[in-house]
Length: 475
Ligand SMILES: [Zn+2]
Image (tube, rainbow, N blue to C red):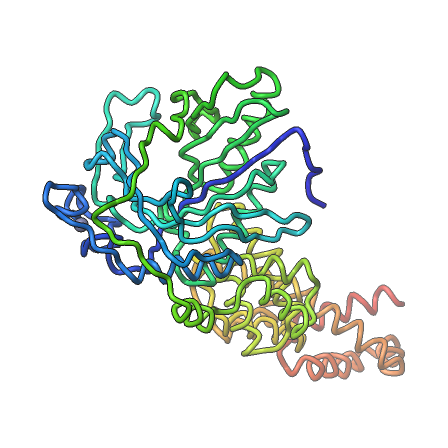
């Protein structure tokens, strides 16, 4: 079961998701794919905020953000308005970020909605579309770096911000929430969450009704849990500073450090972005998006349970990673052994990935190979353990499994398999065993029976020695 609720703790998350499936940035025609580019080359006057440049909304971004809002069951605004969030920082050459605001007449893309965890419903407060600021690069840790470098390639890339109500009560729940959200985004096909900084998270936490602390710069789901655990302990021991505080997660040292007293909302001087007219979200657009909605993780989990007779837990784990669920279904298509294959993927493959801190999407196992291994085990060509070993080898090397290996494995002498076959033949042929105990020549007949039972795959020499040893035990 999950960790107990800690009613002293209130955690809310603010997740930023890059719409990596877009071709261009949110308000200009620079490519959205800024990865692996020379710093400050993926830019134009609009995303650099040069005087006289005007933003134009990327409508594709609205559609993708709308898909997210509808998938989370949020209420979509009829009209979407952009606001300027004013602040000065090197990552923002315009001195304002084009974002949305949910007060004083502002209308975010959507409000409300929820994500269901195993024993918890987490409410969504709002979902909005905004541009990403630049990336600031430090040498080593933020607190000790002698300089900061700014790369504007990322400036203006479309971000969807998803803000939750403070419904979470443990760091572990926060991680589970993010995993669920990630699975939904993957199934929607709007975000390749694997890419660096594609899914980022800030967390708000208050302990025993104290002041709220915001933790920024949390890079991975594991770090969300670590940073929040650190903060729970720190705040329980020391309390929170008066007023809201922003702290930075230093993943190198495993601590949060104070950055500044958090800005109040009025510090940002939000006001409407006059360069962008309000965007009307029509009923047609909503209907179109709903009609194109793919199967989402919860529905897929329920289908796995029904269609493949999987236990709830197994179906939940498989569908929490789109690539793993896809691999499962593609393997089942080739050879229908759902329980065995689900079990292999969850305990062997996911176990391996977790140990190596890798994502399932990096796997290079062919579904044909998984199917062939499962079939080979069912047909008694190899035993269960050999199947798992071969699968793990394929996962670690990324190489295809050669079919002749099944025959070789048993011929080289998979003793456990041969022993099991010999046991079965002995049980089913009591008379032949009695004969062999009396007459050494009758052993050949037993060897023949074992060879036949294995379809001629067992190594005759090993088979003989296994039979002789067993006869010795009996005599
Ligand atoms: Zn640009």
